[in-house]
Length: 489
Image (cartoon, rainbow, N blue to C red; front, top):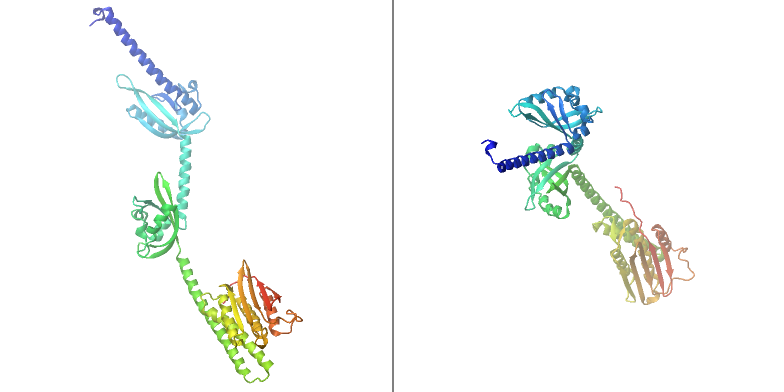
């Protein structure tokens, strides 16, 4: 149909439709032009001979060339000399109608610097489908590449540390039921120690390398999940069946939204061997100490018995009493070694028990009537042998003195023995309600062997002694126990 056959109204409608389409095309063209003008990517059109035909502001920002400087020049101005063959390859793809997508390369900027570029090139065809030019979009990925390089370096450093650690490192998942999942990563030490290759270990989990006699992992999984971390000992089984004692330190963390457990297993074979050797050595030393205490006790008892035998030939009462006092001193020391021999702690004894035993024995020796009553208030206090021996002799002397001298002529009364601790200080008290200590006698300067011995022993344990005579006699000794080093055998 010819336009002259149309009435004016129809022609007007056609013109209006054409005008609308033209406006839409112009709007679309303006939109595309806006994208090209304001995008950060470099957009250019290139002739099939490599000549730059158009150049947007993004290209100017990336390369530093203005549109006037770039348009009409060859795109080789952007390609480093060592990479000129790249242009021929890309143009060959374009001429054959192929696209180039996200091709990473290096381009040279106006200032001579190099920029990492992600290049996409598409052929432009005419109405007959012939390729006449190409459109190129270049994105500057220099910062991305730097970040990738940093990440790669970080991963390499991590991998280096991961694989060169002295301990075996395992990363594994947690199943929905709370049990351990398969390993997702292991280091070289884990492979070497267990005898598996990496691929074999990634097909199994922690419980598959745990000894049948040792089920620590399942028990500690609850602790790890509730507290976030746990340290425990276990036994790992190698591929050939050998068992390796290990100390495992595990903690839980989130990796891309999934809960994972990182475990570091340290081989403690040498530690276990040293512990076993130390245990055997301690047992031998304990046995030797027991034997020493036993022999010392026996030797002191032999001395006591010899003194007892010798005393039967002594007629002088004063000399006989000296022998008996020496005998009792030997027996007081023998009692300490007897208690040490029987104790689980070969260096300390319960001195409260010792006081009760020794004082009761002295009471039976000296008291033959009911005129003297014995009161004891002693606590369960452990003392080192270095303190117990001199204090034991002090107990013997002070209690013996009260029982021998405080109640002449069958005088009735009480003997009180106290031993307690206040903070770091110990208090030992022996008192009686007898006739009292002679007022004209200085207990620190007396010629009495017993009191001189007590004064010397009080100084030996670093204590002080006080005498009170309000109602009878009261000796109060205060001391702090020194920290003695272990005996060297």
